[in-house]
Length: 337
Image 1: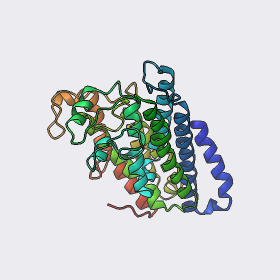
Image 2: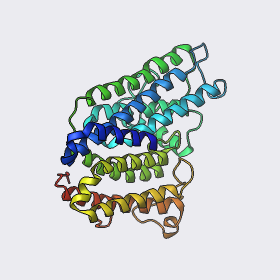
Image 3: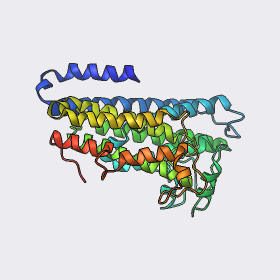
């Protein structure tokens, strides 16, 4: 990833040329290059997932009989997921409807209408609809307990017929690819403004709390693959890279503000780095976020929850979100409350 970022930065330097004296143009152009590169990765991984799907046959496919193909699809799903999470803040602001079709969770879709066909690219769509099928044999018990209580719930499963396997590949995954292609097409001519780019990063930092908090009820984001912590790491990585586009501008007007932002990113990075694997730590039995037990706060989940909550708190003068808002004020970039 570092090589890719370096390439983007070098390209930005070549493209900027006369923009050296215009920090706003330099920052937004750099952000645009970063988002475009991640959209390209997202598209490539989604296409590779589609190509890795087994050729449809009479009994569909599953993780036992088609282990190699399923493993390949899972790897490409994870690659696509990381790319999306790195630019989620920008995508959600710019393309809210595509963000829903690409990133909405199963419960969000069936709240409106039951999904009668898991494979057809209608109803529940996007990354989590695909994830739900790819890990159909590995859903955690708390996830099953949560989802099975919902009106309109249908158990996840692998394709069991040739028609279902074909719809998975040529409808559900194809819909994801189509939505990503639309994002790329619509993003290409856009002229980003600093408030959108900077505000998207602040928004994505706030979503970190939701990602960890929903794990307590089995509602967290990448709940089937159990990679919500990987989502959070990618969110943080993308947020830091987008902020780096603004850093010279901020540094020139308020080095102390930049120091505070960098320290906040480092604190969160250290908290994520202290944990192994891609899944969140187990939620303590009896966890109550409103009145957490001190013993629960001393565990891996409790410590992470405290750190993420503290850094996303807009009312705390020492949080990362507050530091980013202060940095925005330094360069006179308006950020919505």
